[in-house]
Length: 105
Length: 205
Image: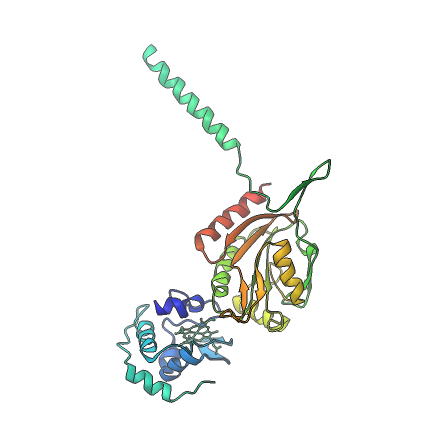
C-alpha cells in the first residue's frame, strides 16, 4: 500500500501523527484548506513553520519525487477518505492541475 | 476412602512441581565475550564514551552509573525506520515513567546535521524530559565505533543507501554493570513489548 510505504512511518497508520514532531493527516484543517499544496508536498516535500489543528509544527518533510500522477491521486484519495473522512475521489486531472502550480524545490 | 488417595498424592506432586518452577526466576543472557581472569568471569562492557546531549550537557558512562538504560542509533532527518523506532521508544519511555533507575540514550549517526539545537527541538517536539531521555551528538567516528565495538550494532555512512546511512533498528538493553542484556527490533511492537518485560526482570536482579 502506497500510504504505508511512503507516509505512515511518520504520520502513523491511524493518521494521527506523532506528538509535535509529525502533524496529523486525519481531520487536518491544514490539509483541507491547502489541497493543491498538499499534492505538491507529497511529491516535493515541505518545510517551515505550519499550524495544524491549532498546533505548530516545524520540521523538514522529504518528498517522494518518483510518485506518478496516478499514485498521487491514489494517495490523495486514500488520505481524504480514511479516518472517518469522506472526501470523494481525487482525479488525475486534479493532480495534474495541482502539480502545474508547484515546481521541484 | 482408599479410593481418593492417589488423587491427593497427585495434586501434591503438581503443587511441588509448580512451586519449584516459580522459584526458578527467568534470567537474561549476558551478551559478548566472557573471559575468566583466574578469579572471576569478566564480561563484555560498554567502552568509555563522552557525547553531548540536547541540553548541551556532557553524557558519559557516569551518567548511567547504577542505571539500566535502553539505547539506539538514529538520525532526525531519516524517513525510513527511525520514525517507527522513535514511536516505539516513546512506548518504552512511557512504560518506564515510574522507574527512576531506567534511562534512554539515543545517538545520532548524522552528527553534522543533528546539532545540539536540532536535537533539543526534536526532543521538545516529542515532549520528553532530557533527564530521562538523552539524545546525543558527538564526534562521528566515536559514535560509529561505539555502535560497532561496544553495542555490536551497525552504523555507517553510505551514500548509496536511500537515506545515506546503513544502520540497524535495534534497541539494546544495558544493565547497571554496563553489560548488554538484550537486543530487540525497535521497529516491531511485539519485540518492544518483550523489551519492556525484560526491563522489569532486570530490575529484580
